[in-house]
Length: 81
Length: 463
Image (cartoon, rainbow over all chains, first blue to last red):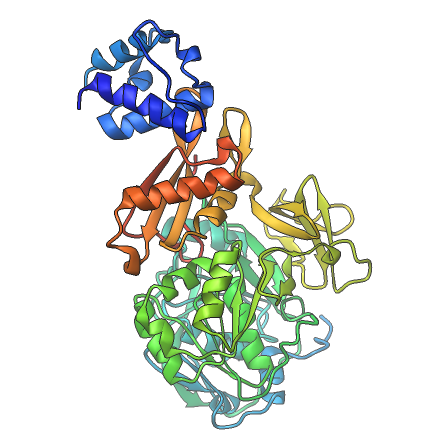
């Protein structure tokens, strides 16, 4: 499964587990509008680390924080695995 | 030094009767208590140790028990050294406890004493002694706290504080055979040894490097009637078919939070046994036990003035004052009790309905985005799942919230065929029903086993 589809699937699955509808997601969707709050994003980062084997946030030293779903996917896709 | 009101350990043991059947045994041998009346195993006899500060060092527990019986009432101090004391801590321990003499069978952390400390050999066999020694002083019993980081603190008890009165109905018949998964050089194990010795019973000691199965088989053959351990000890014991080798009338849990799942498992495994979970700590002593097979304890236990152990809750944690409380820590600057003589246990309580529940240790709190989580409260929920044998909740570092909860799970042998994803989904479902979101594990991981420390407690990584 690609990084992109893994991320999309995980966001949906966390939303559903929190009793929210699975959101429609495009690259332009603001992370805040996905239904994930900061705890939801924290869970997302932990489960993506287990699925993908890395956590790009822990390596990021320029303070960049993703705002949209597309930013988040790019962060993972461009991280050295 | 005034005479011990109750007498020394040997005198009290003898007063309970010295029938031929009374023994203390381990996997390698046994000690017939009656033989100690006119024999001993300390090279040079006990008189050379009068008024000395003595560290007892042996890998096995049985030689240490023999030394305790011979030296209480004679030595100034007896330091019970558990086998896992790190060798680098020995010089500081010797200095702090002003140790004059190490009594050792050639094993244990003190078997190679530094310069300036005398070594007295603890022989394998008893040899006759001619004179009955006077055991007329109050000996300090020095115990290590069960803390897991750094050098453990040394707590000062006496035989009187270790055996102070409790209305717990455990003054049992003389033919009781006691046992414990604990090492008797720790508070929880020592309580059981002292009940066996003072109550007229026998004692089956556990032994390092013996498997849980072998220990249970040996305990069963010895006819163990009363047995204690931590909830972690019991969860591990119940994983082995050998749990069926014992038929105890009394099962005791202490040292960690006893959740409903482990109480139910023990009730199912030992339907005829009384099952008690006790609260005790090395510093505060035994405070109370609960025998209704329900987790937590009745709120009425707290705040009874004049109770044998008085308890109060301050800032969420349990404080205890009783005759069983240790007198002080050795060393400078460490205060054991508050101004009114209460020990702060650091064990956090939550009142739900008419019962208090232990939710965890104050220092074990995990911070998830500014909200507090006790790993034990998460574990209590997960332990209820029928496929779960043991679980450890821990902090997992997280760039968004600082930490999230992760849970390591040992699946029961009988549930090994079930896909972990199925078990995980059911556990998360159960967590969502009862826990607020920040306490729900972000990730669950199947593990083959979880480490249990020498203290009998689950090893917890420090976040």
